[in-house]
Image 1 (cartoon, helix red, strand yellow):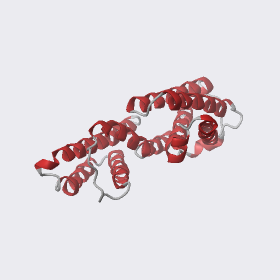
Image 2 (cartoon, helix red, strand yellow; image 1 turned 90 degrees about the vertical axis):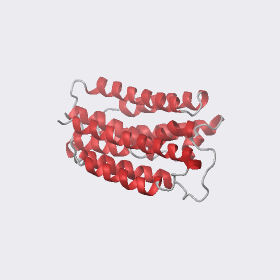
Image 3 (cartoon, helix red, strand yellow; image 1 turned 135 degrees about the vertical axis):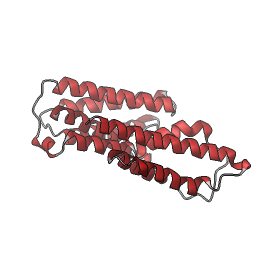
Image 4 (cartoon, helix red, strand yellow; image 1 turned 90 degrees about the horizontal axis):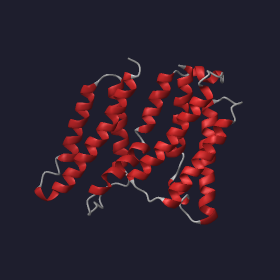
Length: 238
């Protein structure tokens, strides 16, 4: 089980560095031509390497920061210079990063190498829950944005609060994940009913059918991600 904690920590480090610590400025800066783009890529890759090294806390294992830095730099360089931003690019990028993390973890800890006693502070269940909550934030938001891009209505509501939809999604997925983890599925139904009152009541006119369908798709997709993540986490400890 302690070896599993290392894998979960590496995944948490990736999520934290790629979605929480990576600002919009860094994300757009990586695509700039020349030395500016390279400098942003280096900064982002160093962040990944440092966070992974600190969370794993196996100070003698220098392979972790080195491999994380090199692999992340190369993958992001190819993505930023050769690929357009899309759902398939996002999924391929994340798959490659996670695959390298899994291979790195397996190659280093398959023999049960000892690591810092800091790993004993938290169980694997806590780290899995922490990773799940991080997934409910920006990673899910980006995934949903790319998924819904093909259905985005042409007209936008200028009266909408800045980033209100994004934060509504964050909060609803966190609540749903919490309800699932504590086994309170009736809470999910209550949340869906409450959102229906506020969001769907004003979209019942025929001229709003496209907006209604867009909101429904986004809501059900968001609920699906949170529910499936919660079920996956709970079933790991049955």
